[in-house]
Image 1 (cartoon, rainbow, N blue to C red):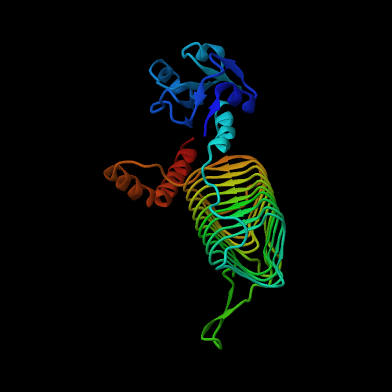
Image 2 (image 1 turned 60 degrees about the vertical axis):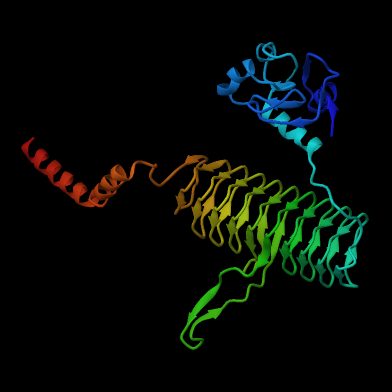
Length: 342
């Protein structure tokens, strides 16, 4: 795939600096880019790399940066412009069209135009696939699943019965959507636990991306709901009856327990744990490895846990942490004695 610098400039609505006929074959990092490749400078600490880069062209933020190289595209947000250009160089295209001979598709399924169904796919009764849906090899769609137009499922995705997925979504390999939530009642008669059958489903909005091996459980009675524009990384666990607001981003290995409601435009970093039955308002940002144990009612950034240190220092800090309650009592006693002296 090759484009002229002028074409790329038009695509991102930038200002051209240099040769608009320059041919660009690939995108690359600023350190490794060659003369046929385009890179970008988004972080100010990498501006110095413009003096040594071999890139054929660079996405930059201002004219002073552009003056350091022969060819550039000036844009307000180089990282966003780079993101837009990646779609032009994307090589993940389908290797087949239509319905593969090995696929099993129910006679009751309703398929839209330009549907692609790959090898060994199973589509059960009353599934509805809108136009331009792509179901890659090995996927299983349970009964009454509905998928909106232009949505793509990568290989080996499993969608349980009654799940609804909107338009322009991307579900990566190994994701499981609509499995039972973790619902059990203690019961001596049942030998310890009585299963609570999960009678709800999962409702996913438009423009949602779900990462590889992520699981989204169905609701116990009402549905688990994922809003429009939500992005979810790999290996995330979303439990039954969770609700996630529009445009929220959740990074890898986060886990959200049942019936928690997360607002719009939130970011949840990697390894975060959120306990159940909480409410988190819009525009909350939770840093990596935090444990959210109570509702958050005010927008802002939140953190918990302890930072990394050498093992020796960490052990000393941990030992002191265990003594905090004792130390607090001692300080309170000393304060009382000082108050008596005054």
